[in-house]
Image 1: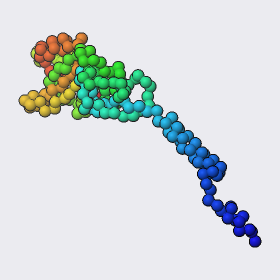
Image 2: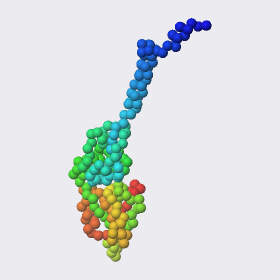
Image 3: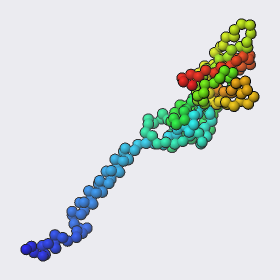
Image 4: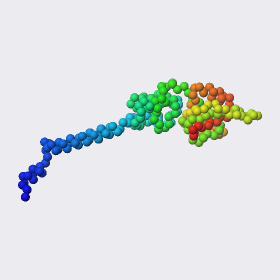
Amino acid sequence: MADDGSVAGRLRRPTWRDPRLLVGILLMTVAVVGVAAAVRAADQTEPHYVAARTLVPGTVIDREDLDVVRVRIEDGAYLPVDTAQPWGDVVTRTVAAGELVPQSSVEPEGAYDGRVIGVVAHAPLAPDLVAGATVDLWIAPPASDALPTASLVAENVVVADVDRDSGGFAVSGGQTVYLAVPQDQVQAVLDALSAGGDVTIVGRGGS
């Protein structure tokens, strides 16, 4: 039969002076610190802006236009939340809803020299034509004895908005499309529209 004193010694509760307890605490601490460091190393994401809706050229950015997501991407390519304050800046190219906002697509207000022009389309619009789509603008001169030939007036212009309920124009099938026309094409578009004729807007890239 074992000695009672020997058994009591083996069953004695460890104290803070017990080296085994100290070693166990040290190992647990190292493990916790290691896991925390690994999590920090894996999460290298930073907050960046994404478009809350489709932003077309000429859009002046306000807070409702942008959302924030955390992503891991190359520095400098997209608008970071911690340094960029884009409120009041203007969009110079289309940024689709949900797309990260490229820094190159945002300039100080006044940097974009295009104009938004409302055009009444006489030919039916594609049902999926929406803001942000890229289109060509064609105009056929007023009908005469000769068969009118349509001319390409502007190409690769961005749709800023579509008004499918254009009041009185809706009776004759006309619908108003607002085009973000670059400055170097504005004069040609205005001249063609002032001459009259049937307007057709042709979508590009599946628009």
